[in-house]
Image (cartoon, rainbow, N blue to C red):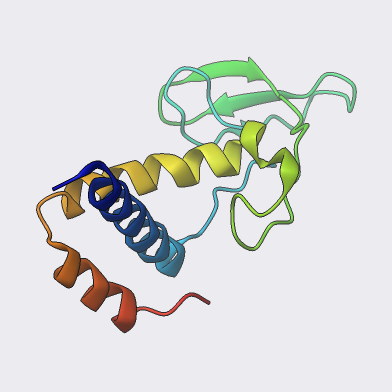
Length: 122
């Protein structure tokens, strides 16, 4: 396989992996606080003032200061906008695509094209 064929195979594999991930894509809600210790959702303690909100994690019994989300994403498809590179949603999406690429590594060009024709882009 020459370099051009190898590049086309990698592009096709990436296209199929992206398409498969997009079918199941449900971005994580970044507006809810997450425990920095165990990464589960925290619950706000009602006795704190609006300026200094504290969360309590029921999973690991850890108190932490609420971190207000500084990023909001309106992309239907991650990577469509110029600012997607630094977006947590895009990073999450690319991690899932990487996982799919590993799964698709053994497939031939014909098998990848069959998958591509079965799953049209939204």
